[in-house]
Length: 141
Ligand SMILES: CC(C)(COP(=O)(O)OP(=O)(O)OC[C@H]1O[C@@H](n2cnc3c(N)ncnc32)[C@H](O)[C@@H]1OP(=O)(O)O)[C@@H](O)C(=O)NCCC(=O)NCCS
Image (cartoon, rainbow, N blue to C red; front, side, top):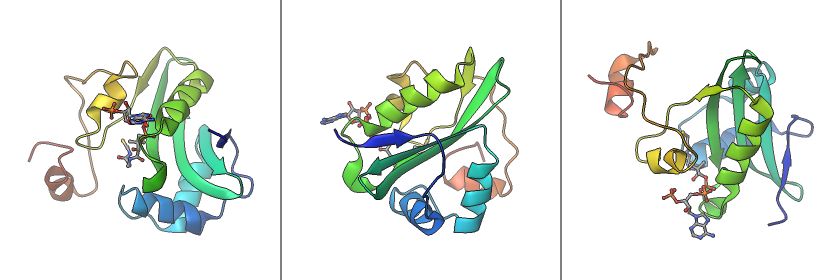
């Protein structure tokens, strides 16, 4: 696969990034919000097919113990070809923390399980809209 991974946001059009987020589908993010969230993150990862941005992801880390991966997603036509695995492993290698957490989209747990993530038994979340998050399958009603 000739897709290149880059770990800086140089050249990223945030309208395109937001379109990837929506088409993946992972929901809707305003391009400016996405830009702010990514540029304030400890680590960003972008996949480029030539000049075309095809996948995004970012992470927060304390650099010592803990990291959290967010928003790994790609255009549908690039899914199920190994790109997500490549990005996830590249992100984990660069984070290099002994502990890393994320919350999977419901139904994608097996993808993360293949990369040694295990279901958490005591994870707790305080979301902006708990009712919506419950409908989406992230938390108990
Ligand atoms: C979830 C996501 C990031 C995974 O990335 P991906 O590139 O599709 O992942 P991979 O191709 O590495 O692996 C996905 C599956 O395709 C399979 N696969 C990989 N290469 C393959 C190939 N050449 N042919 C057929 N299947 C293949 C893998 O075995 C894997 O199966 P699994 O899901 O049962 O584990 C991506 O599908 C995506 O963006 N989905 C929509 C947004 C989303 O849900 N993001 C997750 C946020 S938590």
